[in-house]
Image (cartoon, rainbow, N blue to C red; front, side, top):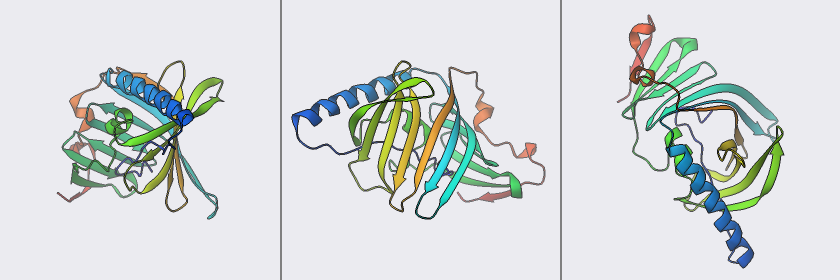
Length: 215
């Protein structure tokens, strides 16, 4: 999921060198730039979302709901009995079923998209294309295709942007194994109150927790 530990959400697609495609590229870049700037203007963000994983060939479908809280490079993800917390230096991954927490250092790897990178770094390492507009849930959305310019684990990303609010409504990531991971934003709240403790795992709150320190 998000692939849960590394929160993999990414975005982007190749353009042919025609005038028509150039115009789409320009429009896509303008949309992504506006979304990025607007997102970065918020002091914090809370998103309630639905996560789906589909592989038609293997007849696999999984669906979960979750919550993501973000402030700068800090985030807190809750989904399917797992909680992933990062203060920008350390990552705690707590699994409730076994009362276990894994502790890792944040990897300084541009290939791994943290929630903050996901929400802000759309136009730097990818090529994008505006494919049109769609209506979902009664709201008009820009539909974009994006693809990384370097080799990644995914091959294609579909991104939907709410046309009026200029923020993410849906992301669908296709990987090299035929899986599609989609994230649908059900609620988006900006500038929500947060505390530093929201982005740290307090072992005292989980009696008997098994700690696996992998730093």
